[in-house]
Length: 222
Image (tube, rainbow, N blue to C red; front, side, top):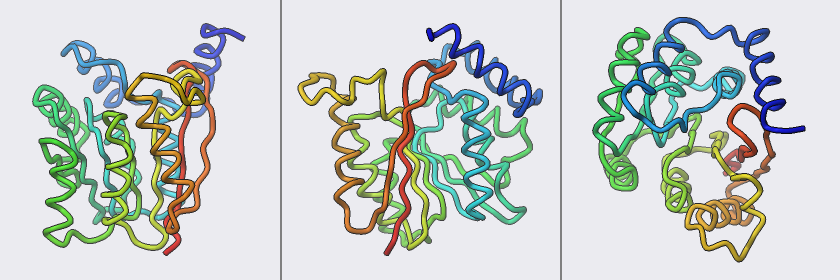
């Protein structure tokens, strides 16, 4: 199979199972028009995150890396009426675009976007005694993934689900000698998941409209 076939199958899944609505389509269109990088999850991946959060019964979700708000909309739609999503974003232009997309989705009352460096924001949340989150999605700058995981664990409880995106990077993560900081960040992230006494984790490769990549999935056990 090749990239075109992977993308075609993703399109088929999305058409048959996801049926992306106008709000989600507009979020992608406006992100592209604003010049944001195309790093958002695919529609079927967004629905996958939504279903994971719903299956888990998540009431409090933390997202590290908002981009244009596309995955935030998927995740916030998984929440009950009194649920809350906190999403962190560094780039001011991304914050602006995401805020507009989230408002249009009618989710501004449930979504709190915190601008600035994610590590600083996470430390501030910890210092303020922020209540634990039920579901955490890590999809930001990959070299800092190990730090984000360590900080996220301080905002977790037994049963918290942690999902990391982009953990295959075209298979490059298998190369221990890679000089790519993103690859090395993901490798350490995976190693920490595997060795951490509080976590039970796995990872899976994916192919599709977003190319050859993968997700890591962990549950906090204690």
